[in-house]
Amino acid sequence: MKTIAAAHSFLDRQDSLAIWQAAYHDLEESIVYANPFFCETFGLTLDDVLERRRYHLVNPPDTTAETIAQYQAEDRQAMEDGTFLQRSPVGDYRDIVVLKIRFDQGILGMFKFIDSDLPGPLNDPKDLDADFRAVVEMVKNYQCGKSC
Image (cartoon, one colour):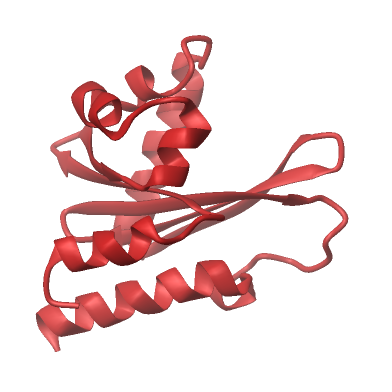
């Protein structure tokens, strides 16, 4: 993939992963892309997401400042280490898997809700299911096309 627009076309077709891209200017994030499933999950249009740009404006109004700071810290970890990966319980029998990957001048983030009884640790992106792995592979190809 040679352009970010080509990557977005691929990401738009992912209907089980909520995916967004955040660019960073100093410490301030700016959401520059969100796929249709991300928008649907938050009950927003793409125009709404791009206009609001900041995590505290895109997330539900009751999202705490501490939670927003956590999201930004996860982004910084992904930018420094290359990835951030976490599986957390979010309710009865449901977990959320969050993967953030260093991408361009920020991060490409994605999340998916899964049944909490699904086995397996998540220590590395290779432990992820096929939906996540397809996006990870796309990112590798995109980044290689820019720098290899």
